Image (cartoon, rainbow, N blue to C red; front, side, top):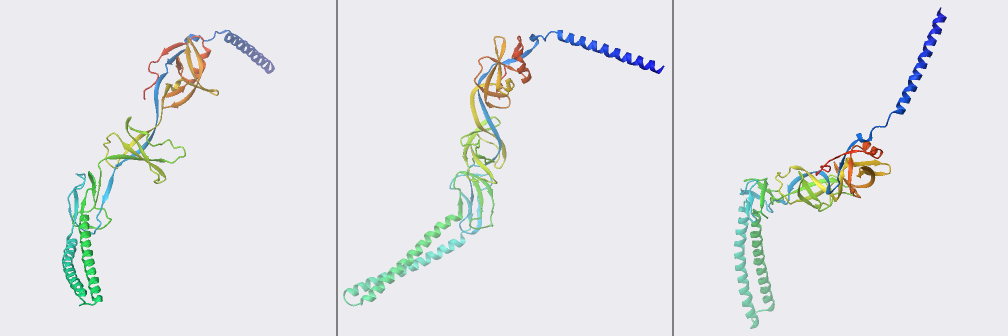
Length: 363
């Protein structure tokens, strides 16, 4: 009985296999006889190339600094007598900013003046003696040696009072150091010393700037750096200045560049701002970047001429986030789609097109 069941099972399996083979053969025949997809059902967007200026910009972080700043100190030590300005105050060139106590200097000056009077009197006496000895020598009443001694004495007395006169002039000039004046028009940035503080030579009393600003930014040094002098600088899409100079010395291993501003930057000194450096600018034929078809032979666009699409090889000269500048420029519309879809266009005889008026973005 079991043998009969086994035989029946084998027969059933063979029947199922024969039936499945027939169904598979029938399906292959149906697929082979099916018609190809209707080419007219494909729709693609086309755009017109535009003549446009394309820019390449590189972003950096720049610091706002004073265009011209200076720290003012005294050449003579003394106590601060009076500070005549405040921080953020605007000042004019030559305006007195700080006075240093000049009591000691005035005392020295008065002492020198008294000494000078005495020395001038001594010189007059020496001159009278010399003139008298000169007359006596002419009549034979005085030895030549005594005449020469009186002449030397007169010269020494004259040299002595002239030296004192020079010292007085020097002290008067040094007294000007005790009045700190503004070397140019500007504003006070900070005040380090106040009334009663001891001011010593070389120690800053206050700092000031000319009230104008510039920008500084740093970048890594490279053999073929894209940063050059005269390049335009943008902040929030507005041109605000240009690279005035690139410093010959690096700081912390980075090259520094100075930006001269043509527009007012309202940010305070010491703050940071994002800038864009215009490194390249070209004018030419611009299309959206999703019109390009990349193949191993090169880069192509799909031209739409007389209802058909044909490939055209192009060279990409510049690219931004959305657009590309190509050469040569197509004289007709080009397809805009995914690369998979672009690659299929030549296989279709009829393609529905949709015109996109704003294919190239003005970024």
